[in-house]
Image 1 (cartoon, rainbow, N blue to C red):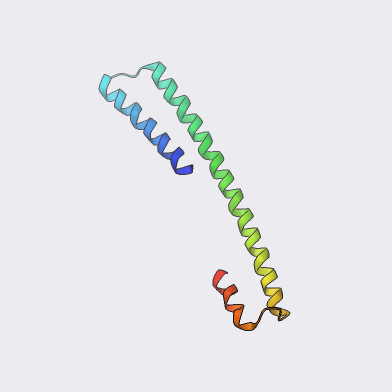
Image 2: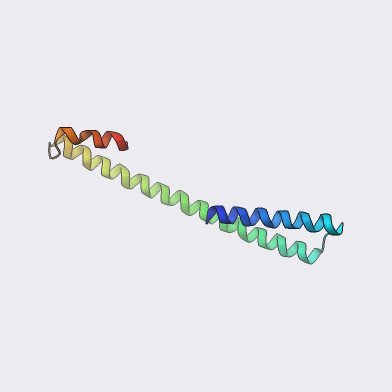
Length: 91
């Protein structure tokens, strides 16, 4: 979705440039429509980036919790020492 929003913004910018080159002037109504669409897409992109950052933070927190539990289980020898290398490969 993030890539799609970026591509949409770029395509509208390219379209505006094509129209300007073709006609030598800017249709103000078309320009406003494109500007409005660009603003909307940029807002969507910003929201997606915020959502992505929030999701990343939540994921990191969950992984940290799993690592702590795993370490505790290893310390208490609830997990055989041979399996401790699994933890090291994900941290």
